[in-house]
Length: 174
Image 1 (cartoon, one colour):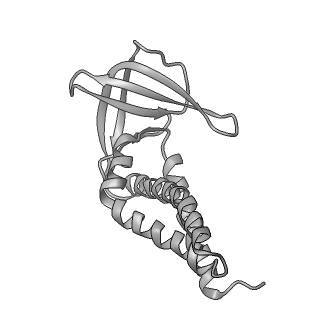
Image 2: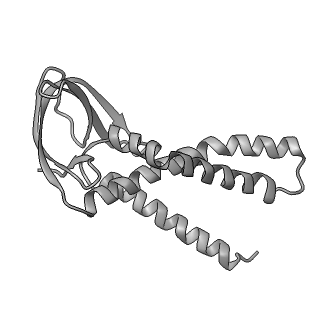
C-alpha cells in the first residue's frame, strides 16, 4: 500500500499542527486557560466545526464506500466528538503559541486569595495544579494552571505575570 502525495502533505500538516499546538501548552508554566479556550470558541468555533464535519464526512462516506448508510452515519457520529475535541484543543495551543512568541508582552500583577486547589494527574503520573483565585481588585476569579503544588485554599497568590499579544496571561518558572 502506497500513500499518495496529497495524503503525505496532509500528514505533514497534521504533524506540524500537533507540534505547534502542544508547544503552546508547554510554552509557559503558569497559564490562565479560561480566556484562551473562550477565544478559541469565539474566533475559531465555526471554522473548526466545519473542518471537523468535512473531515468526519470524508472518513465516513468517502473512505467507507462499501458500507451501508446506517453504518456510515454511526462512523460519522462516533468520529465527530473526538475530532472536535482534537481540533479545539490543539487550536487553543496554537493561540497560546502565538500569544507567547509573537507581539509585545506586558507585565501585570496578579494577586488574590486562593479559594480552590485541584490536582490534575496525566497518564504518565505527572501532576499539575489548577488554582482558583479570587481577585479583590477586579472582583473576579481566575483559574491558573501551575506546575507545582504547595498551594492551599486561603493562601494569597501574588505574582507578576505576562500578558501576551492576544491578551492571555502566562508566566514561566521563577
